Image (cartoon, rainbow, N blue to C red):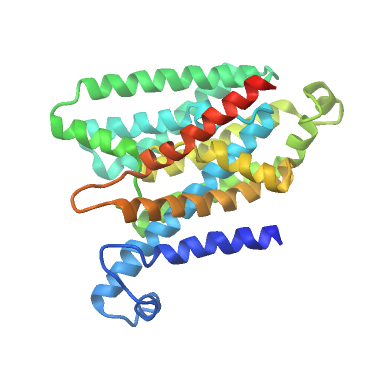
Length: 320
């Protein structure tokens, strides 16, 4: 019953998002446009603007939710989030460099390249060490380096207009999403979610302790490699399309854990479904609150929602 409600809520958010925008459309108008039988204007609004935006948001949210659940399962820490491995910062660095040189069409590729370099560095730095803390330290170090280089790039921005483009992109938004973005993001994210879902049984065994997991046949090196690559695909592809959107991978898995339990085998796919619905819902709020000439960026909104939850978790952990 809970699973059915979760699916219905996610699908409802995607469908409802098709009705949100500066142009009011009725249910019949939306339905005709989806079938390609509406007016030219309505067809463009639904099929080229709102539908790709909603689907892209769902895909990105799914990737962030799944990666957050996997990382929390691996580190056995509810405060872990996708950004802890530095992939968001690395993708942002790649995109900012592309903006610096004016290569706007290459922003997704640059962001994905930044993520790939970050994943390579983390794999190299963490080496064959089995401890989760080593992976976290490597991720924090790479993230700090990427953030510093991003700031350096922005510091030497050739003109104020380029700097503003970098800042706005880092705030995160789905406003310019097109089907070509979905074609870039969806395959990579789906592969990443599948990889993370497949390591669910190993993460469940790991909850018994690293030594116990090894004695039961879990290869920690293989597990860590799949975790890094799967997370890089989910986070990197999302950031490459929509910019930096934080905190979804932090609180979505935690909420799902409270409702469905902490079994990683179920937690990862359920967090993906919930993340998809939540990001689309957040985008609906963003569009609804956006006035003429003023855009509420999606990354800002998710941070405003996520920061209080993060502080709640931090305070809760200190009392344990």
